[in-house]
Length: 575
Image (cartoon, rainbow, N blue to C red; front, side, top):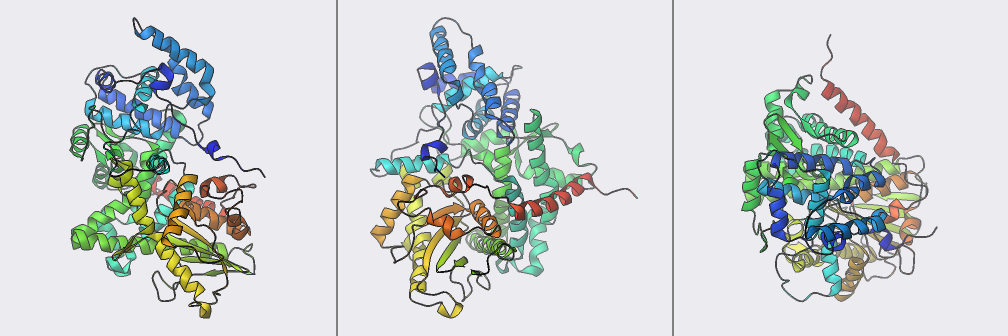
């Protein structure tokens, strides 16, 4: 099977510079936004976001909605030749054009909340396409100079990592199942009081057991925005929706408002952020709607985007638990306790997935799963190990989230590189980098420290680093990682393959792969030097599998959960 080239997976968005032949000035874009009603603008952008982010949407439908409107642009005077040029460009390049994407829609939503007017007119698809082309001119700009000279590779890595925080494709059933399992289990961790305190911790955090919060709030919002994307409707919801569920409506309002924001509150919070504006007056990397995906309106709540709800499902409960832990224990100790609790929960979740895969009838008899008795226990070699004959796949699970200030709102490229270096390679007394820890564990295997547990020192090792958030790795980052490993003498032991990096979503896929009786060693060997997937993204390799992974384990659990959630929303049956 031929392997797609890296460029196959990259599509660059276009700006006014490419289409009109000139950048759109910042003040011009701001004035355009001010000339339209803010409420109509935010609703149209939310509708557009739901439309293009809906998984069933075809590329042709997106082109008709976001590119073809340029052919309807009209203007007078100096604008005429620019419009004529743009329309020639569209006719020649339509099939390859990308204008609308998650980042630009989110950016414009923030800009509307700060700058939008109070008129009657709402923007058409033509106007929104114009705004997106203008905003795309400014998204790639950095707020300040780098703290040191960076190589070209480092500059590209920084842009890739920040850009990948947007425009992510999700395995939606896996996201639902994972979030439900993780954030229900973590409340029972000993750091937060143990099993006896689990229900109390959940009720303090969400005002109800987490299962109720998930089924009646998060699952409903995800279903609403999904339906809006399918129907091309505005993703809004009112309190009447919950009247048949039997839920306390005051509790529903409180929970929705906790992840929502009014226009006035949003504008104030966006502008209060550090380095909120650039020198040109435009907002710098606004991120409020990552935490507040609902706009509170008189008639209910507007769901900003499917991507924002996905972020809320993925990390929203994490933030809520953190705030409760800080309230209970103080900022420093509260952060430590919650971070440990979540880290333990993620390791247990991954271990349970691996155990389910090993219990599959297709899991081969000569394969073996090695798990610690508990996270951090004395018998822990690595978080998850699968042994196939003379090979061992070592999975190191890291629960750290990408920090907003250093990644999502990074002012410079060097800030992103600094964070990556610390996360991967730090030798600080109080923080050891992920690859430094993994390399130390491999040293212990090579020393024979775990032979009593059936892990031979002579095993050929395939290391895999798994993170909760997507890092945004690619060929250039992998090249730098190999160079830094050589510099620090990490992962240089004999018979150790180059490290693969993936998110928890890729880990889930690999466990499904094993459950189907397919060899992980054979899969990961294709990532060795001079092999087809050397240095490439793990999700791209997974997505190129033939036959594709069936995700049987995930589907079964999702269907069970979906049935429970559907019943919760329908409400109690009458006698």
